[in-house]
Length: 250
Image 1 (cartoon, rainbow, N blue to C red):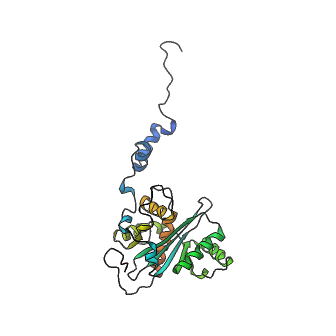
Image 2: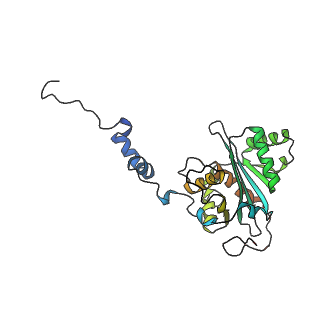
Image 3: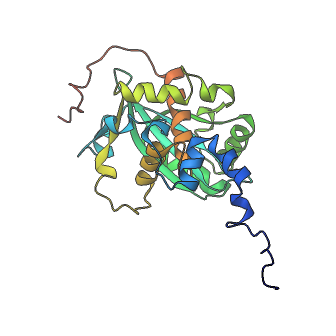
């Protein structure tokens, strides 16, 4: 290159970080802060900040299960673009508090999914099982019948759409319930586990704490389906409430 000749214009970063794309990303503060400023997710971005209010330290799922409450099951089934399934079981106490009884994740095939549900039905006083959309409902009923299990009549479909963001019945309603401590979550099932723990309880806890910034929300969807089943079908009856915020274990 001759002396005094101008150097070619070379960008100081790759084109994916061009000025135009940086300006575009800046219109979405969350994306801009995480991707270009290396700032953590702010608490205001998370949708369920009150989840932790419902976690009761030292309480086990077995203590809740011993009450033999009517139980409602949500099932989030895998699709072609999303492998894996989630099952969440919620009990409804006499005051219709939602008591988290069990959570299961797995990359099950059809017969195994039916077997997992069979184990859940055997462990709980299951009233209804709710699964997303009619196609999945029909498929799940077929799997259960082929497995010679007898709870197929309890399976109902749930169609998602605009209702997902509805403040009264959608995901936003969960935060209202968490804030009002209308849920009981057995903290002994996951508290104290190492940060990298991959157990089913830790995964659900992480999904609820990090939504919508987490890597998955299969368990959260199954929890929402189960919660909707409680709202639709749990019997309205009088009974003895839990004493105060803490679950009465006696």
